[in-house]
Image 1 (cartoon, rainbow, N blue to C red):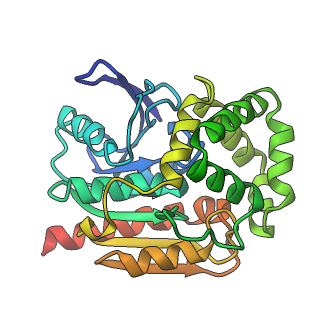
Image 2 (cartoon, helix red, strand yellow):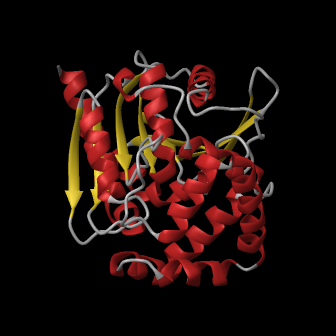
Length: 296
C-alpha cells in the first residue's frame, strides 16, 4: 500500500512524498516527470513490493503538496533530498529520474556523491543551454522550452494559463497530447488504468496552480547550476527510440557528457510507453546493482 508522508523542512517548507514497497527494503528515490507529482510513482508499486525495495517519491517544490520555493534551482533539490534522507536515516540510496525528473536525479548524484549509489534516467531531459533543440521533439515542447530560455516571464505566464486549462478539462488536454504521440504512447494512454493514474498525477501536480510548473520550465530550459562532469556515480540511461517528447538525441548528449554511463535504447518505445512498460526493469536493475555492490 502507498503511504502518504509529510516532512517540515528546516526552512519551514513542507515536503510531501509517497512511500511504496517494503518499508525495510533498500531505498530508491523516484523523481517525477514534468508536470508530475508523487502519485506517478504508483506505477512502481507492484515492482517495489516484489523486489523488496523501499521507493520514496517526493513532490518537488510547488508541485503536489510540497511548498513552492521562490528562486529555487535544480541543484538546490539535493539539499531537500539530503534533509529527507537524514530524517529517514538513509545513508545510501539510488535515484531514478523520469523525464523532467532526470535533471534532479543528476543534481543529487553530483551534489551527494557519498550518498547516491547510482542513478537511472528514464526518458530524461538533459541540459539544453544554448544547444539547438532536437528537430524531432514535438512542436509544443520545442516552443515552450525556447520561450522559457529567451523570455522566462512570458513562458511562466503561458504555463500558468495552460495549467488552468489542464485542470478544467483534462480529457481535452489528453486528446491533444495523443494527437501527436507515437503509436506506443497512444496505446498506453488508451489503457483506462494508466489514463486515470496519469490524469490524477497531473492534476495533483497543478493543485497549487501553475506557479511550480512555470518556474520549473525555466529551470529546465536554461543552463543548470551544476555540471554533468560532477556526476561520478554510475548512470544508466533508458531511452525509447520513438520518443518525440524527449528525443534520442538528448540521451546521446547525456551519454557523451557523463563520466560513467551506459545506455539502453529501446526500439518501438515512446516516452510514456518506456516508463509504463520498463519501470519494473529499471528497478530490478538497480536492485541487482546494489546486491553486487554489497557482495563486493
